[in-house]
Length: 160
Image 1 (tube, rainbow, N blue to C red):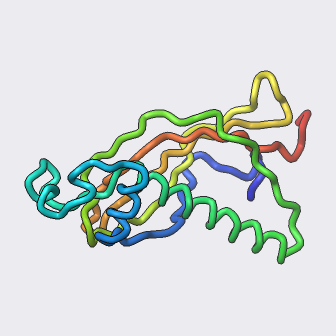
Image 2: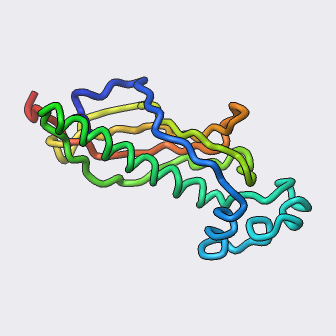
């Protein structure tokens, strides 16, 4: 992973895609969000969604899985090049979570993020704080999911 100084506002990163099958949607919903339009095709068709819809939490969980996997890939590549790797801190949270359009069985969602802001932490000068907009876009080019994530990112040159 990159250090705070290496991150540029406006930088965009594509980090994977996922096709939501009916079986995946039902399996997730059974365990975590057992609402009728996530569990039954007919109930989904009769709902505002117009089809078997993935839980928004399912869409978000896939985003997190792909984001972490891509971070591990980038870290492995940096290590292979002999670079020093930044170990990011925790996220203090997120804002502006929106499920914009339903994700239906058969939809493929591609995930990306774009850095919106960065600043040095006022209380922990060895850390920077980065905010990035994470989005999911379906195969028709429609944004279906969005949130603003915040993360603590270590600084390479504390005191600079």
